[in-house]
Length: 255
Image 1 (cartoon, rainbow, N blue to C red):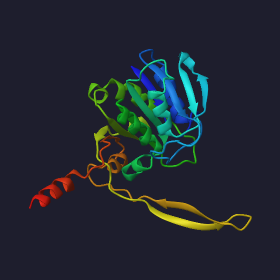
Image 2: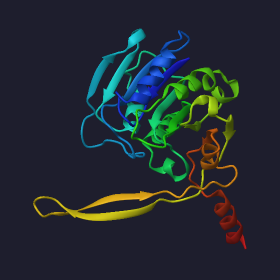
Image 3: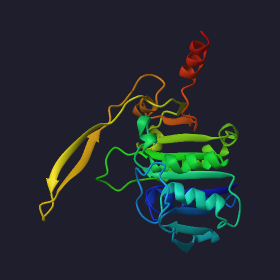
Image 4: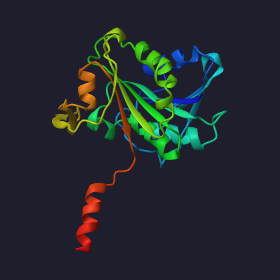
């Protein structure tokens, strides 16, 4: 399979490099990487319009080509799929593996999901891949998640035939503790934000944003699957139209 790897944590991010290393162990796939040169988390669907996209070329092990882009995750996918820089046309885009979950309303901010969404909009199916890390104080282990991508996701004809975007979150526990995989829906919750006011050494006021996200652990949600140590797989679409409201408004206008 012809695969493009990208992410929002940056070209040298551990999750992306682990995914490439594990996939490159088999000769079944052609793989290239086009990823941001720096950390781009929470960039969402932003694109770069008012400055150039500089590239740094890398030669990957096993002969693959890599490009670090001075831009956003969406920039990377646009450039990779429509900029003529790759030696092949990708059949699949894998975005990740992200260091941290992308569950519920996370998907509206996530650069990981945004990159996969851009691929779907262009017409190439994509998986957004995230590891539901519980703590960032210890070295992160992406090997189990990467092996699951290679041995399960890419070998499942139902998943690989799925046209569109699958948002996949992996439990952080060792794989032997996982309780299978579930098809899920996005949890419905919103971030509760706080803004701490501070002053820099020159006395200028600024704000530091932080907060927390309530977890919707109702049955069938992605949060519930991760809480139960299951791989969560959520099909996503690009259509934000409220079809229920549209149908009702159409009926009302005829009344």
